[in-house]
Amino acid sequence: MNTQLLVVSGIIVLVIVMVDVAWTTLTTQGSGPITRLITIAVDSASARAHGVFGCRAVLVTAGPIAIVAVGSVWVLSLWSGWLLIFSAFPYGVIEAQSGQTADLADRIYFVGFTLSTLGMGDFKPGGEVTRLLTALAAFNGLVLVTLIITYAVPVVQGAVARRKLAFSISLLGRNPQEIVWRAWQNNNAQGFENALGQVSSDLIQCSEQRLAYPLLDLFHCRQSRFSLGVQLSRLDEALSLLTEGLQPSYRWNSLTVENTRKVISHYLYRSEQKSNNGDVDVPPLPAIGILTINNVPLTDNQDDAFDPLKNRRVRLHKLVRREGWEWSVVGHQAPGVVESQRVR
Image (cartoon, rainbow, N blue to C red; front, top):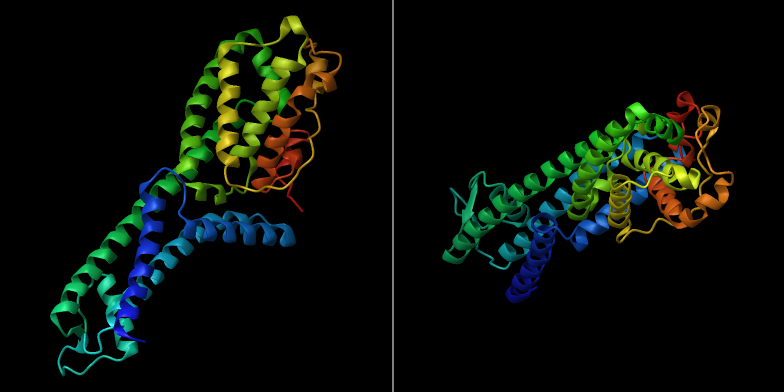
């Protein structure tokens, strides 16, 4: 392979990988094409493994595996690109003491050592051009390592923020009807509205983090109380009961509730961008036994009340399934059963 072809091939590889790195780490427009393919592959593989083994451990490890996979592909691609460039110069890399020309294995070692910014090692550049290239490669490696770290840290922080928000929502109630009953009590109405305001604020942040870091969708939890998709669905079902499931004169149509529904819709929109979740059925209506016993003024026909919300509830169902849960965990079974539910 001639010199020009090697140099051009190396530059093309470097440009492709650095564009992907910059797109993924320095913009708020999601992942670059390489990172997107890796994310889809890890997500698909973990979902298949979860379907076969029925164990959430494979889902829980998907996020960390994806970060490692993305970083590894970036490093190996950069390594390959610079190796092609240095291979274009037959005498460009020599042994430090003997001056003997480096072979292919030695060049691989030299490029890796240079990109790691650890120094020259046993080999050094053999000419003016390769000295300059060595400096550029070292700088390129430093930039890449820095960007990998600065990307991984906010992704982990975003995953923690999701868990925190999910847990705070779970404190409102173990299921939709319990959330409604607590909100319905006169001495807790203001506290419920204040809680909704805080949820809305935190959820806006999670929505924008998801736009910047789509890889966040691969961070799953072992317990449903830390799953944001499950908890948002519980809360939205409760808000549907408050706004549609009560008798007309008792429906809860406050500005806080309306804004919370809009923020949940925004989160669903962000989560659905560039994702293919397949078709799911309209989930069953939320249970109302506790509310009936406590004489909450429910409408006589819940089917008609929830009919306009079919599309919204299907989107919530997709979100729950995407996080590896069955709809039953949203709150239609006893708490002791909920945590053991798994998608089969």
